[in-house]
Amino acid sequence: MEINLISDTVTKPTPEMLSQMMKARVGDDVYKLDGSTNELEAAVADLFGMEAALFFPSGTMANQVAIKLHTQPGEQLICDASSHICNYESGGPAFHSGVSCATIVGDRGRITAEQIKSVYTDCSNIHYPETTLVSLENTTNKGGGACYDMKELVKIKELCDSLELKLHLDGARLWNALVAKQLHPKQFGELFDTISVCFSKGLGAPIGSVLVGSKKDITKAIRLRKLMGGGMRQTGYFAAAALYALKSNVSRLQRDHYRAKQIELILAKQSWIKEVLPVQTNIVVFSLHDRVGPALFLEKLKQKNISISEMGSGLFRIVTHLDYREVMHEYVIESLSNLEL
Image 1 (cartoon, one colour):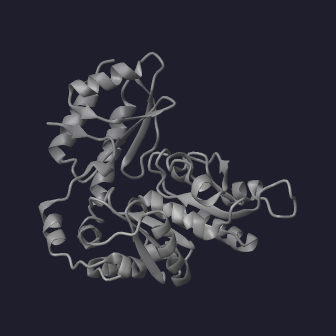
Image 2: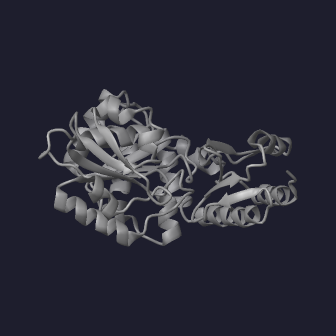
C-alpha cells in the first residue's frame, strides 16, 4: 500500500467523476462554444455573487492574469513573504507584469491591514514603486493551511478602498477555508476584486482553476489568458470534472480536516518533534528536533511506503486528500506513533 501525502494534487478522478467527464458537452472554448465550460464559469460566478468567471489550466496562470489585470509595469503589489505568487510561480509577477512584490512576514501566511498600511507606497515619492494591488492567500500553504479571520479581511478591504488598491485572493484552497470556517463564497465575493479557486486539489478534479471578477476584468482576462498560452479547445471534459467536484466533493473536505487534526495530535506527542503548527484544514506542517536528521526521517517513512513533503528550512508537510482512505489513515497514525528516531 503506497500512501502519498505529498500534496492534495496527487488525487485521481473517481469512476463517478470519469463518468461525468465522458458526458461533457464540448466545443471550442476559445470561441466560447464549450457548453460544460460555460456552465462551470456561470456556476462559479453565481456561487461567489460575482459578474463573470473564466476557466484556466492552472491556478498559477489564473493568479498571474489577475496580477496583470490590476497592475502596470513598475508598480508594486503587497503579499505575504511565504505566499505562492511570490515563491512558487517562477517569478511571474516580474516576468508577466513587470511588478515588484513588497513582502510582509505575517502570522502563518496571514497579513493584517496594519501591516499592509506600513509598507504601502504611493506615487508622491519618485524613489518608490507605487502600490496598486494587495494579494492574499487563503488557506495558506506554508502556513499549514491557516485560514484568515473574516473580520481582518473586512479591515483589509476597507484599507484597500481608502487607498484605491485592488484586492486579489489566491484561493487555491479556499474551499477548505469555507468548510472550516462555515462561510459562504459570497462573503468573499463581496470583498475581493478577483478570486482564483482551484478544483485539482481538495476537490479531486484532474485539472483546472477558475478566476472570478467583474465582466470588464474577465473580458480582459480572456485576452491575457490567450497571451499566456492558456486558450484551450474542448475544455468541457475538465470542466465537467470540476462541476462534479463542486457538487459532490466540498462537504467531504471535513473528513480531510479531521484526519489532518488527528495527525497533528499524534505528532505533537512524539519525542522527535520540535513543533507542529496548529491544524485548521488539511495541511500539517511540522519540524523535527535538531538531533533528528531529515534524511533519516524521510527514509524511515519511505520504508513504510509513506511519502510526505520536505519544504526546506527544516519544515515538513503532510496533506490529506480525497484518495487518502481510512485504512491508510489508520496505518499512518500507527506508523507515526511507533516511529523511533
